[in-house]
Length: 379
Image (tube, helix red, strand yellow):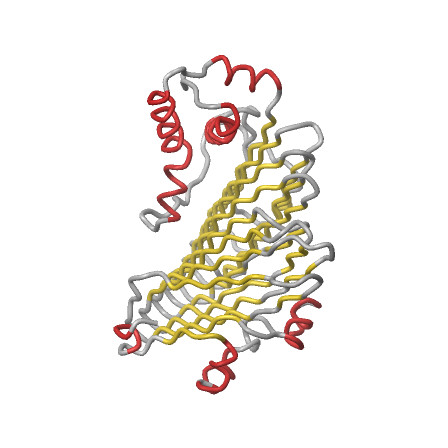
């Protein structure tokens, strides 16, 4: 940690050292109210054998302007990794934590069962970004959760491209009035991969808001799955949530499922869910090949144009420029899709199915395929 941040009281060190140098802070927050060992069997295993990880503490009204970064790697066959990440942002604090994970491929299976606890104080802002590229012999079974106080903001940005099996559902408990939660998840599953990701949000206070945006691509027989839960408690009036899931399959052997689950106990809320599923066939690939440009400069222009059209909104949110809108869908009779379960007294829920190759999904497809077949002119 740079001296300028240490002078302001910011702490960034590994968990083993934090236990020795800051025992009171660790004892107060470590696997107590956020993720107790009794939460699930993997949390219990983690609590028993954990080692390593990151400890971040940001004092009141301190903004850490540069991202804090950590990197975890498995370096031996058949090992288990159980690092613990603990982030504490006091009232009015702001911090961005970036985490990377990777491992070389071994003959034996590896297990990753990490744990992340984030405490967002009143009017604080925490952004947690992670990209995992574990080898395809790794079982990635994480537990991640945050508690957000009054007017606090929590952002989860997750990229899951590696591992044999991933089960990852970052969770936020919106405890204080006016708190906000945002999830952006991107998953890519290839041959022999099962990427099961999603998000959980508990609206336990009035005027809270959340947004979940999930993008997934399955190819070469891979499987992707979105599994989410949104719970709005009785008394959490004037709260809102929006869930958007886009899934893309590249062949007949790949599969993708969407399983959103919503429990709405309050009537004065806005709830929106939208999902699109698309598949790329031989005709679509032929179309891309027939529209290719012969000039390298034109190809690069096309590639940049598609990138802006496809990822502009999501990329801006990843960089923290904008917040995804909380919106409701108007016009036409809503149609529920997939395994969406709604328990509500009077709330509005809409879900809409689009054509398999539409809007953002189409642009994602074209951009992704262009990396294999070269660029093309987008009509």
